[in-house]
Length: 364
Image (cartoon, one colour):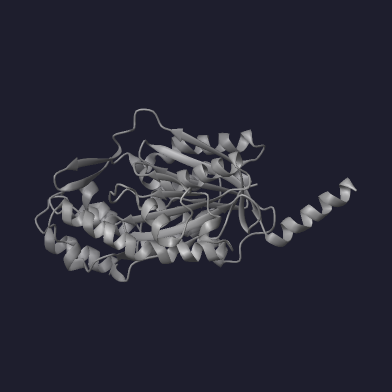
């Protein structure tokens, strides 16, 4: 059964603090009629630091969409390979062991996808399948896990590589002055994550079931307005309240699997903001601490879009993981409004070997 192994994560070297973010908002928009509201919303995110691919002075400039997309491509090619190598090492596999690469990103565009470049530059087999996903936003981290699970279910001996590359700072638009845009300027950060889903063996989350859910008639709540100046991010004020209709979908997925979503051992979810996590805690009936890994990602890195779920899982690994067979939930939320959800049990290599040995003994 497919196992999601330890993710590797990297963030850029340029850091902007909460206080610097607030000061920038005050200095750049001193006469904005809703500045006090925007400042309060930014403070309430709990984001202490964010990492960005360029110094803040360059980030605030806008030389044009073409230039920004070239920065996206060059930075992705410079930064992704090392993260991929670490993910492969953590999964104890080589590039030639990978059968499919699932690449998710919503902050830049390349055709052919970065998957083609990775295959050529990093020694992946030329028959490696490519699945680039560009339009699921923050939900794409969960979607990548689910598509890897599907692939390894169809091909039980196969291995999948997931790569999430998000440079949200390249989507900054100086002319977007709505409260939602000002909030986004203080919420999103840049980050890269990669993880392997092994068809056989490995330590991590043994994936057992996945599902998707879309809240009807909400496709305009999180979206891009694509203009000559690039991607203009639009965020509806109703988005923070979406956990109330999404929580039942999580409960339903767990119920179909014979589990209770309120009684699991670990939770790895997308950290869109503190309201999202607080409401999910409320509607799933789980303690505030259940989402400590997601809250840590939000505090230290901000919302790094599709990479959040993988970074939160990395933090569970850093804590020592969970008990063998511990039950958990993974979920990403994004445009649509879409939820990508998965259920799995924690698996250690030693525990898996013991189970195999016991099963073999029973058949003798």
